[in-house]
Image (cartoon, rainbow, N blue to C red; front, side, top):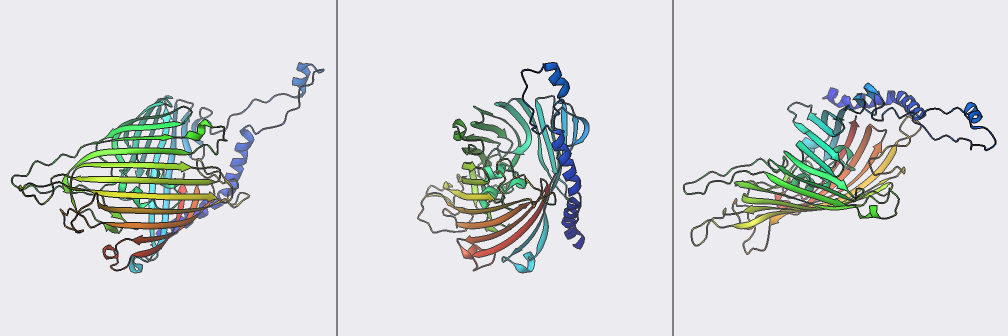
Length: 473
């Protein structure tokens, strides 16, 4: 365990020792990137040939990381293999080391260290129109993450196929390395579909005012619980096969039509939908707390359509950002009741999940938020890096949809399921040391609606403190 805990420290120290070299490299890159230089105005009474002789013009050099300027193995923020504009392969590595303490159970969670993520992959393009990405979890038993090929004929007409995230959920579609807080919201973890194998068309139009994504997938993603098919009894109808899903998402950036500066016009609002059909079984979506404890189990019989609908908003004016999201899911329960007066299984009310959050951040040191925080004065390179503060409030609840006269019950075929909810407030500070390293500290306060369904019976509120060291290449 000591050797494991030492890994982040060794990685951190090595990067800091290399900082002077990075600084020299950055200065060389700046010198070769064509920094603006004042040039005397041309004098009318001096022949042009004389002026050219006195002030010879130097050819403008392209930045070392500009596509098509170098061949072979190069360093452009990360290791890269390039052959002009015909081929590019960037080698990528991501790691997150977490240390956390929680009042949930100090005997098992106090002072827990773990790897949040440890991934490696490649990303690039070839033959002008094709883009690709391959990423894999490199810890023991890891899985393939994104494995896809994108054909980009034009910005407004692109086709993508492979394994990637179903286009649903603003926060879910944001890379975990770019999140303002350590953990995603409870709604994003519980109600969004995640990754699946499929294909979609996507693009943007009208100077990025409109973005769209629409696709079909083999299932409804890897976020839902594994399906638990119901046992068949004599006379039961055949189970519904698990079907693929279809999804659509669109966003609009209305301020891009205005005359506002670019750092103010990136407001985006949008909506998304995902629909699929699930077979009979105890397959309802479940709710989990920040550290994975279940507050609403996947125990109730469902059958039929699963529908998810989401609304989103994001805006990053200068050093500030604000985001908000609302997600609603319904799991149908067709013919899974205990029977009616005709002796037939009756339909039960859908199980409904509702979640929302509002979040904001401020880069205290003044760097722009849009596109990711890039420290103007990196740590040990003439500065301290960039500092950001972030806050978020969120709610996630599960219950039966619609009104019913029956009392709440945890019976597998209850008409009125025993609902529960989780309210979470998170505050945090982010320290961007340089373009590769980020250190985060979060304080998390969550409160359950029903203390009887708490992982610690009778206790409804819990504190968790987590710190994370992140390295992205």
